[in-house]
Amino acid sequence: MRYFAFCLSLFCTPLLAADVPGSQDLDSVPRFPRAQIVDYRDVAAEEKRYPQDGLRRISGQLRASAEVLAEGRLRALTYRLPDEHSPREALEAARRHLLEQGAQLLCWCDGRDCGSSSLWANQIFGNATLYGPEERQSYLLLQLAEPQHDSLVALYGITRGNRRSYLHVEQLDASTALPALLPTAGTLLRQLRTSGELNLPLGEPDEQWGDLLGRTLSLDSTLRVELSGASAEAWRVELERRGVRGNRLQTGDSAGEGLRLQQLR
Image (cartoon, rainbow, N blue to C red):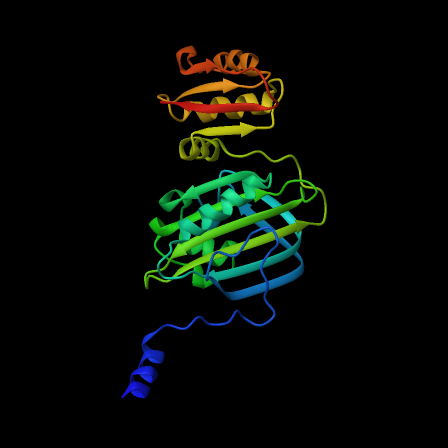
């Protein structure tokens, strides 16, 4: 009887499958606990377009308001996640790790804001397994810190209609230097709302970042922030010049490098 019960338990308890042969994790993104690699590619040279916004098809063409185009070595992994964990958990763990390593977050979208899941799965990542309900998807695009400044990491998470969850991770090591890349205003706002602060490697105000931060704060007219850092006062003046109301801006500690924006409750 005990032997029968033991045999039955083998069929009732899900067993962890092995990773696909020849696959390996990326050094830049630690594996989420108990995730399994179900698809793996390592290509010496490939051109990739990574959207920086929700993805749409208009007149037969893929459309995003901004994108990054690069060519180089591509490593792509698809993980099957444990049933009790969501892709958003895995993405958040990866996001925190990469930011702690100095990576710059270029794009962050979630749910229907990402657009068509079918386009992400088939046109961007070439893996139909990643197709699922649009409200259950998330996407991150990051640029790694020096000395890997010419490498991009893209992450896409989805829970399919059958409730199976996947995390797709790609690292593209560009064969030529990447151009200067900036996050989107929506991405900066999502970071600020999520963590309550933004730490940016900025000195005196410049045109590009002044425009970007002005657009970020204009997306939520109720948001109030404290600006800290050696150039905090100069940034307060710059943002007011760009139409941000003065009662939404407060200056804090003027010590330290860079610019810190902290959400005021």
